[in-house]
Image: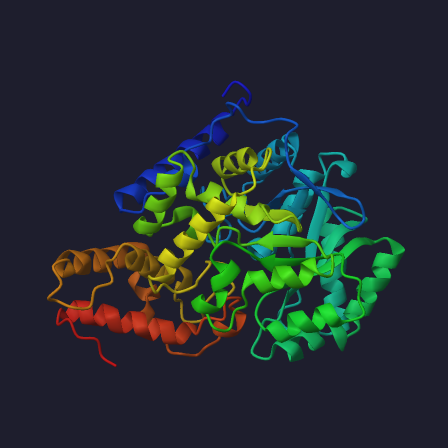
Length: 467
């Protein structure tokens, strides 16, 4: 700790985080792999891998995603209403800049609307030419589709970020919604906002213009076919989604296709969800984890996944939401410099992906876009617990199975510990206000019914699932 002198408040947060991890371990949810390398020893300086944008910007391969900022209650602002810990945000950004990170990605929608302001405060303390800011026109709500309301969102980003120029501006999450093309046109075309943003790029208020994509592939293809010189495009890419996104959810699109379409147009790719909402960092599937440990006992699952996301030459930067200092430091080591994956390692990760897919989990990335539920359900936590039990082979429906008694006990006890009873699946009424907002296009009410049926079966202890 000689390189960073922690004050008492920060020391308490670090030790508090460690205590939280111990609590998870006691519940059988060890996160040791993602939090074991937080020390300052051997942090590399001057070795960050950089990629070149279309306009010549030298961008750090590791990008800092501002979706999961730390809070004063030592959690992520993605999962709590706690106040953002600005002191910790400042400290994390200082360290990121020191070790070569220069790309910071935010949105008016992140951290319940507080992410841009927090990033603006942290970066204002540094010379403007030392970093690149990316934000988004996040006019998701139908009430913001008018030109007037969309302009308010756009103009407010400059105010919150305390800048005169935005380096990278994105149309946020095109393809989302029940009718992706209709929503895309309403948000950006019919109101003239795309034309406006193109003019802003000409004036220099925006230096680079792109979009992030989720959902309807027709919208992705349409956007690329438009007479627009996109500077970059943000896609979801990881070693599961590369070939198997459609296996996880038939309405998703394999990253292999998305990346290839960008590559042939010479459009740099910015990567989101390299850890698949943390699932590739936790890697609760023990069979998959053992394959990685056998290949490299020292590498964490997160290191494998981050190396995968950064290996394609057309990737400009890989975004990681680094709530805790341990996350930042592990990622710094991974990308300073990046050791690209060999053919043998790529084959290994494909084998790991297939192993994971043999366990029928729900493709939730805990992004929280489905929240808040009007009836109080904690949708992400329900899915996290369910997926954990599936991966640990504790989703057992037959009483004749030798593991049934223990698995039943662990599922029910763990469920009550993970999700307050008033927020569990049995309170879902099927209003479906959540599914249209899900980037993974999960039929959330149907999954809630399935989980509730399973829980009721376990409570009856009759080993029979109702249809």
